[in-house]
Each structure stands twice: as structure tokens, then as C-alpha cells.
Length: 475
Image (tube, rainbow, N blue to C red; front, side, top):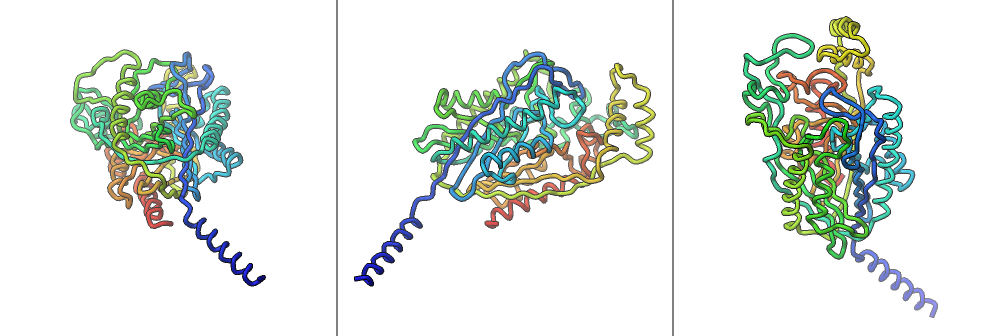
């Protein structure tokens, strides 16, 4: 009898083990938003080199967060309405997330949308209010991811893409020889300029990527849970000076929720628009006459147009009950373009002649930038990241990546579908290719906005592709 009981017990254990092995895999997702609107005394980014104080909140800023879990691996996204987020702020937020949820830093992607109507949190000596905001931002990003993690529930996922070419134009143009001008540092006239006078334009200096990529999440019962979109366009603009706004990124989130009929859900639907590779792309076609528009008109136009295309894509997506997830990260040590002795002497002479209340000329601005770059170390760590979501590969870099780099990553990726999120996990400045450096233009001028070595782009592109290859191989 004892032997029979033992046999039956073992048989039952085997059956239970087999049942557990045959249990269906469970995919879960959770989404949430966290308000990151600053106090009005902060200094906003604004148009190029013209930062100023916030005077009004047109629409609130948010960290829009999404957590995915395949039962073995969990990953998180936080897409933040910010011009750029300093590496130390990202790292603080990730530490808070790990403490609260157990999610390790390499499973968390934190990116800035690059709305210019927000505070930048890179260290620019902008005052106590901006320093306080950096602390606030880290905590609120962590809060948003923690809330999304708390919302995890059975879900379905799918992805697809569409095209929206009418809003993306390369902002770097070859200029007519007679209209070419030198950089702020002097020397011969440059071949390429950013947003030159319409009378000076010859032809674009690079491509654009018109693809709108869409990752759609549904609750188990089919209700919309979240949409993560990716589109490579700097920002829409047309926001009055001193006004805080999420630009088209925030307007898109509202519009896609409306189009999907997902208002007032419990838990709330979350729309996310991550910025693609658009360091050289904006929404102005300089080959045609200017089209004046009232404030926020372009924001609404772009948000609605992109949301309508995303809606079309979502309706054609086949949602899956389960997909595998994986993540990889690597840190590259890249060189900094620190000034040589001649550039330093030029900067010291020019910067010394400007009074504290004087509006700086462009050469004086770059003289100041030269002196700031001298304080940088000779190399800086740059974090690259990649996620696998089933047959989809997602790359991420902290720089303002040019469209040609993003297109190259898509072409060479081992995944059938791939997109790249820029300004992710810190700030690495503009990322021109070596050829773009040779042509010149604003994005190539050595400053805190463009400080990496001339050969950084091939290294970053190769680094992201290597991460994607390892994920595709199951590593």
C-alpha cells in the first residue's frame, strides 16, 4: 500500500508538473501618466539660443509611461514632455524605479520628446528654480513608471506602421554659393546651413523618415490600453514665447485617445509619442513660401494628421496574446571635441568683451560655449539601449540623431520591424555623420549642444545594431 501511494503521489506530481508546463503564457501591460509641469519661474528652452522665463501654462507637461511584462521579463518606457533630460536626472529616476518596483535600470527607457516649450534639465546655470525642477522631474518620472507597473493587467499587443510625409522636411540645406556664410568661429563659408533664408536654399542636405511606427496595446477584452507611436520630427512649434506646452506630442496623446473612443476609461488610456531620429528634421518646407499660422495651429494640424494615420494603422493591426520581451544596454566612452589652444585664445578674447546685460552676438555665444567645453572631460559615457518586443526591435540613443542614421539602422536591423527613439537615457548633443560635419552648419558647431567626437555617429549606429543583433539571436 505504501508503494502504491508513493507511485500515485509521483504520478500526480508529474501530472501537475506537466500541467504547469502547459499553462498558457501571460502577457501583461500597464500605462499611466505623471504630471511634470514646472513652476512658472523656471527658464524655458524656447527658440535657438533665446531661453526665457515661463509666464503661462498652455497645456500641462507629462511623463507618459508604459510597462510590458511577458511573465519572465519586464520593460518600461517613460516618454517625457521635455526638451532634453540630463543623464544624472535619468539615473536618479531609474534608481527610484528600481527601489519601488525592482525594475533594473537597463530595462527602463526614459526619453525626452524635445518640445522646446519646456525647461531643459541639462546643467546650464539657469537658476534655483530649474535646479529644483530637475529633482522634481526625476521623482515624477519614477512615480509614473511605478503607477504604470501597478496597472499591469492581461493585455494584447501588436504593431505596424504608416506614412506621413507632409510634415517632415530636412532643415539642413545646401545654400547657394553666393549666400554661404562662415561659422561663428570664422574660416571659409560653410556649404550647409540650418533653416537658411528661403532665397538661399539650393537642396536638402539629407533625407527624412516619413514612417509613423505604432505599437498598440489592448486590454484582454479588446478595449484600447495604450498606443506608443514614433515619428521623426523635431517639434511643431508656433508656441508663443514664455508659454509652457507639450507641443504636438501632447496634443497627439489627447487626439488619439479621442479618435479611439478611449476617453474616461478606468484605468485611463495613455497615448505616447516618442521622437524618432530627427536631429536634422522639422516641419517647415523652405522650398516654398512661408505660410503664417496663428499660435498652436501647427501643433493641432500635425497632431491631428499623425493621429489619423495612427488610427488607420491600429485598425489594421493583429493583436497577439503573448510576445517575448528582452533588453540590452551598452555604454560607449566617446571623445569630446574640447577646444585647442587657438580656439581657447579666440574665445577668451571675445567673451571678455561682453557685459553681463549685453545681448550676445552669435560669435560671442560660441565663445562662451568654447569656454564651457573646456570644462568637459576628454571622454564621456554614452548609454545605448535596445528592446525586443516579439519581432520588433527598438533602439535608443541619447543624442539628437539625424534621419539618415535612423534609416540606416532600420535597413540593417535583423528585425523585420525596427524604430529608434532619440534623446533617450540622457543627453549626448547632436549626432551629425562625419560627412555632415564636413559640410558644416549649426548642428556641427562645437558647443554643449554638439560636443561628441566627429566619429561618434558610426560608433553609435554600430552599437545599436550590435545590441539588436544580440537580441535577435536570443542573447
